[in-house]
Image (tube, rainbow, N blue to C red; front, side):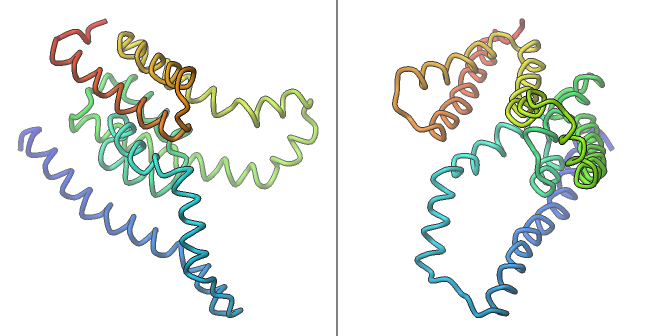
Length: 222
């Protein structure tokens, strides 16, 4: 079996397991709410539910489209299923997968990249569970004895530092694309009144378009 056939079989099995698993997780997420409403007979009006969903969609709806597309290169198909099932995609799964791909020199879109990213994400999930459990047990006590400026730094800048490190890792490989990835949101933020969600969408798809043009013209080499 050659690599193309292996990739086809890998994706087939990934879809067969990943799709129903993610759908089941999405459906079972409603069980606590259904139990609560049934037990205490506190069903909200449909208009209230739709209004609440509309507020969430207005704030985070852009991520419905941006995250699966922008993260796919690092996560791969199986990693995407795992990432959206376990959460912490941007600040945990993507950095771990990207670093694993970089260390193993795996080329995106190959069966090796799929296996490497999947193993990295599985490892991050296990580590995340251990770390989260430990943080729940001893995290409060540790934070209580740390200086205020350290606590403030951890709460305000940890995510930014992770995203910055991930961006830097890709920027080293594709510096020409990185320039546009920074330039597009800065220009939109400074000279337009677009909301943050729209800026994110324009940045992601704008950068993808630039990368596509550079690729077709053979200009991606650093």
